[in-house]
Length: 192
Image 1 (cartoon, rainbow, N blue to C red):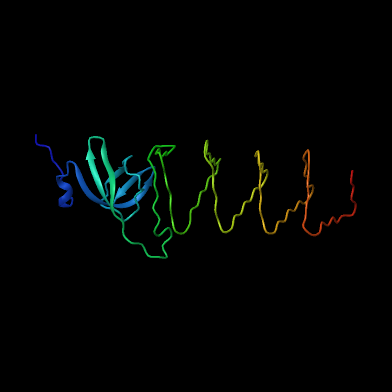
Image 2: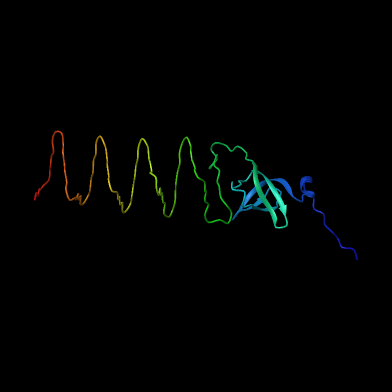
């Protein structure tokens, strides 16, 4: 008895695809899974660090393990008012940590750098120094700020320190000098 077979019309470039091909991303299915514009399901290859977006033209590889997006070949230019326009995201599917290990690393941009984290942020220079240079430097801490140093030098043109409850300065020896005036103003002043 002869079995009936059903033929499916696919675009010519996909009929004989055994290895590499080109496709367009239709939509994200989450967890590094993508629905291609022609309806096929593809996974993001671990080596494809740039996260695809709908409309991207991508290189795909058909293997025994499935269909994989391996490279972003072309990204259409979005309208300027599109949310996230001009944004690219790097990620490694299935990885909890992305590490860059090099003798030197530089990150440079002309407009803005944002570092956001819901957990801890650590900046360590084990044997060197940390240098921060800026026109304005703002620090806001909601609970506790602790500074510990062998020597602390602060140079300012105008300095204001305000405490809403208690301000305490303590040292084995303390020296306050001024070239002109020192003014102490309080409801009660205790010396000694």
